[in-house]
Length: 166
Image 1: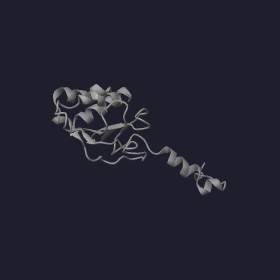
Image 2: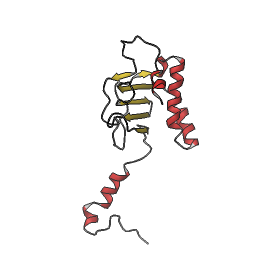
Image 3: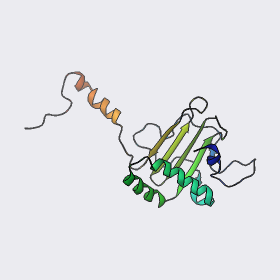
């Protein structure tokens, strides 16, 4: 989403006022939910509720959520969109608003977490995640692999899995 669209998520405000959706002046070093296999329920502060946005910013926030949900298979995207639409959604921004600067945003709601982080270098390398904090889409496959394939039993030539009866 381009900068002019991001900035139009809030109504016009005095130039000296900090927008309600900007919750920190500096961007975090990385995605707030990290690489844990389960995300926290909510990241504080929540930001601005979609219900307190005007019609145009609220529609833009809906388009932003749709952009992420559209990455899913069609049937799953429809289920997730219905689920997300039933609850309150919040938008929060961290970092500068100027182009070419480090920034981060998140959209969160009931069992929804979208994070966008453009914090590497001078804001020139982005990461995004779409998560369900109460039931993430996946597990930590790499950690499971290390536990199973690189355990002391596997290193000693022992079978990793119990033999099955024939």
